[in-house]
Amino acid sequence: MNSVERVNNIKAEDVSAAQSGFDPIELEIYWKRLISIVDEAAAAFVRTCFSTLVRDGNDFAIVLTDTKGRSLAQSTMSLPGFIGCLPATVRHFIDLYPIETIKQGDVFITNDPWKASGHVHDVTTVMPLFHRDELVGFAAVVSHLPDIGGKLRSNSSREIYEEGLQIPMMKLLDEGKPNNILIRMITQNIRVPEQGMGDIWAQVAGCRTMGERLQGLLEVVSLDELGAEVRRRSEKAMRDAIRAIPDGVYHSQVQHDGFEEPVIIKCALTVKGDEIEIDYTGTSDQLPYALNVVPIYTFAYTVYGIKAVLCPDIPNNEGSFIPIKTSAPEGSLLNPSYPAASGGRSAIGHLLPYAVFQAWEAVMPDRIWAAGSPNSSLTMSGEYRSKRFAVVNFLNAGQGANAKRKGFSATSFPANLGNTPVEMMETLAPIRVLRRELRCGSGGTGTHEGGSGLSFEFQIMDDAPDVMTSFLMTQCKSPTKGLAGGGAGKPGQLLLNGERIDPTMPRVLKAGDRVLMETAGGGGYGTA
Image 1 (cartoon, helix red, strand yellow):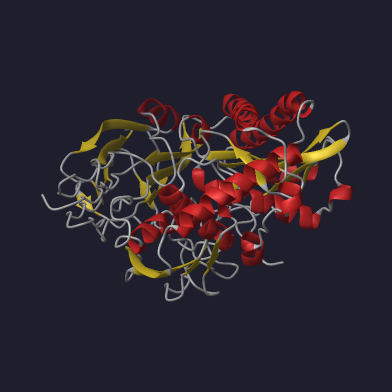
Image 2: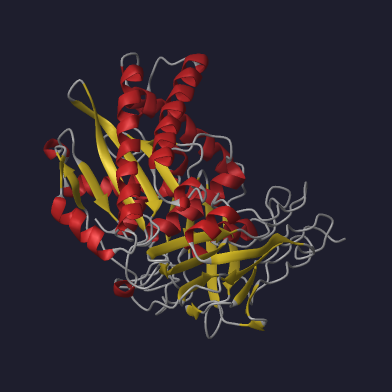
């Protein structure tokens, strides 16, 4: 089964399996208890990890699935889009390792973009969970490692081989015994192995915590029955919300800066009864650069946009995604062929919710919001004072306004990444931060103004050797659009020593160089 089929092949629960005796109060208690278990697993991961990407950047997710790889619950702080990726990864592992062959103590690992979360910089681990020697589900964690080898993460990479180490779907632990060959391979290929392997072992700790905390709940309720009931109710809520939208085909088009010319995302959203199909035919072809988005990620951020509008309050689980299917032509930007590079896939993938919003502008203008900008990042690598460093810092941008409020400033959407603390930036790389402030006035005008981006300026330390640096920025040419007559946000920009430069290409920064990164503002809503 290929990646597109694996993402979309989610079958509804059999009616007989969904019948249960849960009353609403009992179900809510069990659900809150389940969330607390997954949140405790996430806390164990965050507290034992080594990198600032998890602790401060919040670039991770942890999910509990049933034995068929259907998601039951996701931690509160997880990146919302990963709810569409992690369960599919679990199902890929089940395809490779049949249930009857899985043993206690096994832990699976991969960073295959087509089967995990879209680029090699994210590593996923999956652990089978047992109760009284019976397999009851899987814990799955994904997080962005501080380094995965290869070139620094950059939009300029032309194929996946430049982007770093590829870890096929395999075992990290076999009945508790470490795969030392794989561990040596990872350690040899990444710039900061103590941080990278530290984060991977922290993922294992999070999975183990989930398995341990789940035991008490399983003494009083069946995970299969609880999961079936939660999914059934979530699916019903989503189908009811879809049914309220008039049948029809809704179109939108979103533009990204691209390289020599802009990149176009065309969306045809078909509502028929209580189901939705999203077709991205007409989207730009895949690129010989790292902006390509694999189907698993296309699905994840498309369905998240739909859920954010229609059912923001229902639980994050497989049930709410059953009525939704996505497709994109093979060889396109949203369904690239191997060995396409995808390291900067979030710049495109994070625009997909806005494609959904724009498609529904005419039928629900009061429920959607104007376009905002995906977050930017700064990746640096080198050696300073006899110590190797590799660090990724996040900078958020302005988000769009809606009919009820102004756009949020310096906020990550549709991810929920944190702005890396200045103190951590200066600790982990030879830089001095000169200022980080709201870029006032960068949001679009309107009845409600768009959110402001950030102005972030830093300088390479005078005693630092050359620092390899990569910038991932977007909306530097294409401003974020307003809604209902609202003005566009101000585009972002990147300046080196006062001169505007192209953010798509890596740079070697020298001692004393000054860099100014300004992220885009969000679109405004309504005429001022």
